[in-house]
Length: 566
Image (cartoon, rainbow, N blue to C red):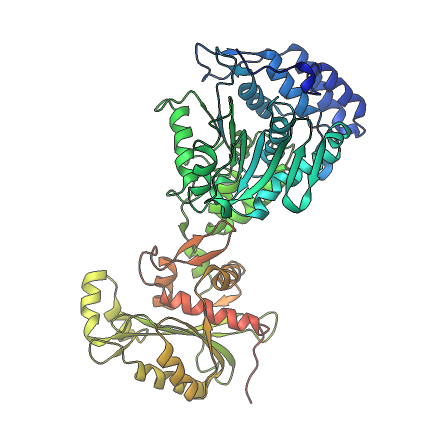
């Protein structure tokens, strides 16, 4: 026996989906929507729906129940952009999901699937679909006292789907009569069945006692751990006959996350390696070997391309990504739904080499500059870099780097690392200090001497391990500025260094040590698209690049214009 309640309990029971679509035709005012609506009407009348291949032999497709869910959703309206106020007519990929989830039922009449995992790229329309599912579970699933929860990493993210659902309610007179909106609590209350829809975030992960009828997980990739997912999906709906976990996400980068765990389960089911009759997998992602610049690949992974997002948006993002490897990884992740590493090789070395314009140390005497100091351990290489901002819009940022290494460690490093420190030392590109450790006093004296040649405005330094030297430099009359190594501080100047390189507004004289370090850099990217050089993941030393980035930041912050000290 299925979970059937008096037909009068749902205001949507008995609605003819054809009539709903026909009314949408009459309601559509925008001329560009009419062909789409007419096509939908024809398809609804003629096409035969093919249920999912994961339907069990003992299950069956209940067309009436599927029609009921589709009719409810298509009675809602879009809330944003050019579609705002227009009927929410499901795209084919969306309708497939809805019909499978709500129409495939077991012999006892309950739904076969209680978890849906939908992984698809950004701007495909997954948030609107999630909001519509939440409202259906709240109002039309015939569940007394239903508890529907919208979950995300933080309250702001959890509010995205909630706000779409709220706006859908505001545009529906039938729903508005029956739903109380409690904005301060991010809650909707459906009064006929005393059911609620509540937005939650990971801060409630430790709280228990939920009796979940439906859980809408938005951007599972953002979950810092598995606590909230486990609390909401493992046993919280045990008292419900047919609970539903509706998980939507874009591909991520952390393969130790709960999102990748669920993604792996979905792909294993899709490829036949695992079986779970209650799990419904949907993964729109391009293979790693696919040509990420090919519009055909874009269309294959975003079935809403040309509908919810303009292909020109893809093309512009692709062109930008071609110029920047860090952006390429973001493009692959967000637009192709590929799981990428957080670390990527950063600089296209042909672009860097194109900026090997001559730098004349003597010609820069008296010029304003900014320093970046990166101290490694006393047994390793130390870097100090001066960045000279241009004196006019036609000028370039000029880079003057200096490196130190303990003299006794040179041969060892050459043999161990296969790096020509000995040759660089003979050529004057690396300075050596006596013994097996770098003598910071020698470096301080060296910087003091540089201060007599150049107008050093500030010296930025990594807070870690540089306390004594920075105090000494302050005592010598320099202005020293601590510089954080996290995304917040490092991302803007790192992106700017790439931009200046691509625009050929940088001059580094082809310094071989700095070039070697630039080629070593691997970039780590966070979910917000911020980047930073990653010393742990980089193939070798990158101290000179870090020092350059810090110095460049100070130069840009002070207006990016140099002047001669007369």
